[in-house]
Image 1: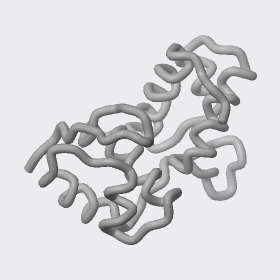
Image 2: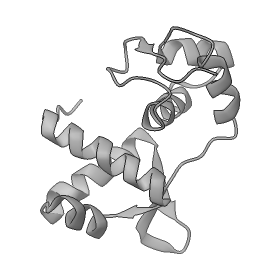
Image 3: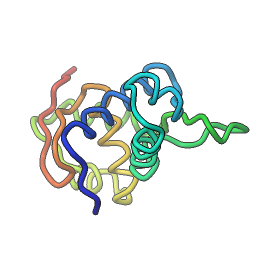
Length: 129
């Protein structure tokens, strides 16, 4: 697994937050927002694609949109009743693949429901109903 710098991870999180807020992102938008090279912006976008949190926009290979999951609302309600939650907890509770549980966990983190952290660790629940 490729290791990224803390600065890259910060850019990644901000770019993902912005993509979620605006409903789309692109290499050009990332380059403009962070004043990054094409290569670095492409790496950020590729990391988001590999994580499964964005997908190419229909009929536009240069623009990407955040991935939404029909199970998100149900998982969010379940998570909000916990103190700590891990990727494995979500995976087991909802009988999901690791990839889908990871996408849901990252979406919950991006929307401020869960604190940030490593994928293999429990996360503090920040937003409670």
